[in-house]
Amino acid sequence: MNNSFALRRRNDLIMAAVLTAAAACMPFLVKDVYVQNIMVLTLMYAALSQSWNILSGYCGQISLGHALYFGLGAYTTALLFTKFGVVPWVGMIAGGLISAMIALALGYPTFRLGGHYFVIATIVIAEIGLLLFHNWDWAGAALGIDIPVRGDSWLKFQFTRSKLPYFYFALAFCVVAWLITWWLEDSKWGYWWRAVKDNPEAAQSLGVVVFNSKMGAAAVSAFLTAIGGAFYAMFVSYIDPDSVMSFQFSLLMALPAVLGGIGTLWGPVLGAAILIPLTEVTRSFIGGSGRGVDLILYGALIVAISLARPEGLVGLFSRRKKETAR
Amino acid sequence: MSVPLLETRGVWQRFGGLIANSDISMSVVPGEIVGLIGPNGAGKSTLFNLIAGVLPPTQGTIWFNGEDVTRMPAAERCQRGIARTFQVVKSFETMTVIDNVIVGALIRTTVMREARRKAHEVLDFCGIAHRADKLARDLIPSEKRRLEVARALATEPKLLLLDECLTGLTPIEAQTGVELVRKVRATGVTVLMVEHVMEIVMPLVDRAIVLDLGKVLVEGKPTDIVRDPRVIKAYLGDRHAVG
Image (cartoon, rainbow over all chains, first blue to last red; front, side, top):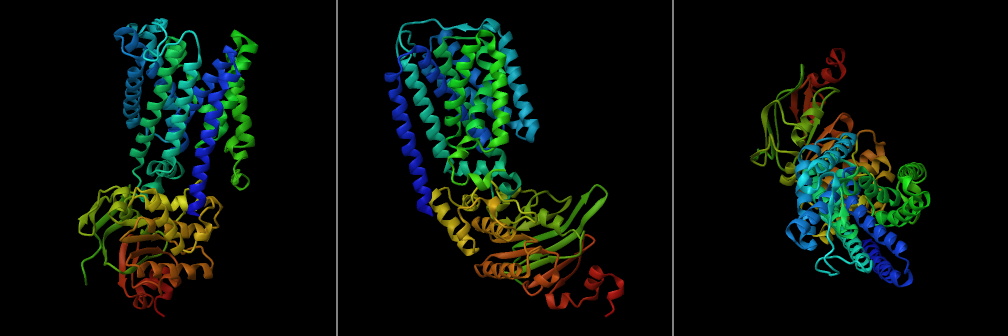
């Protein structure tokens, strides 16, 4: 039995290696810049959703305010770069640390809230963040920050001629987020988080410090989300509050995991691979005014998933699927 | 009598106007199986929860292994060596049986391989090793009870608190449960069990503490307890006390 478990873990790694290799070859087959753009976004959302999944999927603390951490990562990087000339790599880590600290500060009061109240708190806090950035003049207020192009370089993480460097960074980000999840899944934290999610009282009786577990999950999740925000800022080279901190980002981080399978290793990847291309394509078909329509699409997808396969699409591949479906 | 492993000193618990426990002083010595019994509403579960650390008592102190644990949170008590089961089973439903037990084992080791080995060992001890890879929610009720015990044992407790873990089982299941409790004691773990049904516990326990109306009514050997008129009265009412 020990062996079957180790075997499954190893198979996951092999699968990840194969998929990574396949993804790395994609740009050689697809030269179309529009499609490459979708690929970058898909990888980015896969990684973001993987990060969201740590707090909300494994630890069960559903957050619909992760746009806050995404925005903080983007703003920290953009501000440090434009105002102080700090390279984005440093900004990225700084953004991650700031986000993690803010997540801990917010977790302190909010983790005492149960269920729906916690979700509402996350939404409200992210909206407050959005309003603050809307009115913060030094940070560009509602106009945002235009990141000046200083020539193609890895150091400055700016590439004007090709999307490939962004693609490979997004791929690396996605792989790292997956590996971290893979590692955490079979660690003390992973077990504690799932125990906290399933039954906090029982977890406590077994020596799990519930509050600390949630705080740990929040910090890791926020840190990784901010890395994604930092990447996004450099990728689009212009940010304003609505384009990095609006509620839509919170949804877009949660949805792939929900669609693919919440609290599973492969759920966010699978969900992002389906959802992101779908929304990008519908958006371009419907045109600029279609922003509301993709929200309708998300809503419809969630309803469909929760009715047909509440454990997510990964359930289709799982051996246990039939008996576990509710 | 040796030094008690667990001791409550003058413990009170009030819920508003309701006094659930009044001035309860009792102790458990290492190696014992002690039964905490009493009719419905006697305050057994409240006392049990106070010992497990679900809530602190209104008044009085609780001592474990020579240390005042009155205000210590449940998780820390578990670290000290108090483990419990729940009357209404609280399995981690979406996790496999083995993973449920690993959660318990992780309090003593952070090496996953070691925790997993330990968990398998405990499952084997509790007789549900063959269900290791099933999801907890797919177990039948008696297996879930065993899982509760297994999970608690994985934390390597000095004191195991069992909350009505034999109630509601078929006679055969209850009998295997009794054997499991004996086996647990044989490994050196002290057991304090709350039970409602006297017939099951009496042959099992070394000593019984009878609660009634929030107070300790009597305590002593089970053979004496079942004949004690006060106990019969508490359970069956005045009319039966004479015979």
